[in-house]
View (cartoon, rainbow, N blue to C red):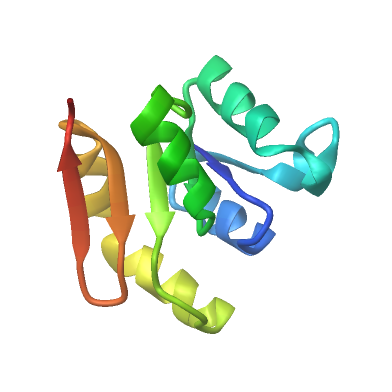
Length: 119
């Protein structure tokens, strides 16, 4: 699976996703880096068939109202350490990938995965 990790999440997450066999980039690797606008992030993700991984609720609104980005993983854990975040992704990654086979919008919580059916 292909991921684009948003600026408020650590670049280490993109590295961990890559180490797990996925194609992942962080917004710091985009032309405008972490200063890329939400529109630029969504456009970059959609043009390269990537899932935007973010904590930013603005992406949820854009996805629900305009279908941009096309695929979205919202991390709704609140403030947790980077190590706890990476452990959560490690434990949930197989389920996340499987869920994207039937959904375009998923929310990762500390204790659950919320899969929103395609509209």
